[in-house]
Length: 184
Image 1 (cartoon, one colour):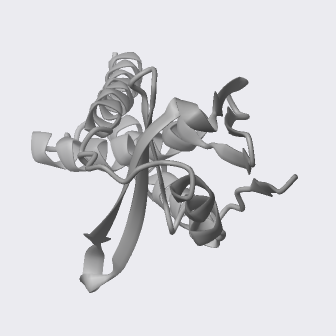
Image 2 (cartoon, rainbow, N blue to C red):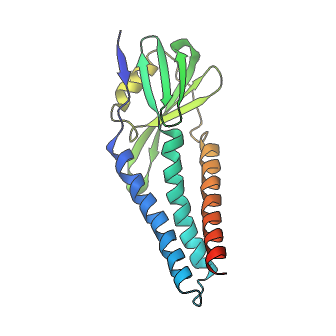
């Protein structure tokens, strides 16, 4: 029985920490400046700029915690494991009803592929070639057992907006509470 497990790509390990440290670091720096020198108030535009960077930092901290996944594919089933939240989904091959591969253009004309597949419970899952080193091996195992049918690549925007709203709310509360307490 052939069994394939996904292997994390190095980009997934390197890029998010930089965004996290820059975003949260800027927020801490500006909060420290405001607390140490309350006479020099920062403009609303400055706080929006810092808040957006901090929100992206918190977003990139929450995203891998919630959506980091490990795929295990065998001849009979597909397991999607979310180890950081302790969730596991198991689908037999006949429960995957369709798949589609999109070619996307990222920054600087970099092309990357995203693979989307839908299960019989109407859940759509996605993974990309920059997410897993053995992307091609994973999709070949799914493609061989199911039919190719179009799946919209924007199906995961709802997850993105919910998580970004949560991270923006956390950032706003941290800034608001810190300034409220420190500037009394």
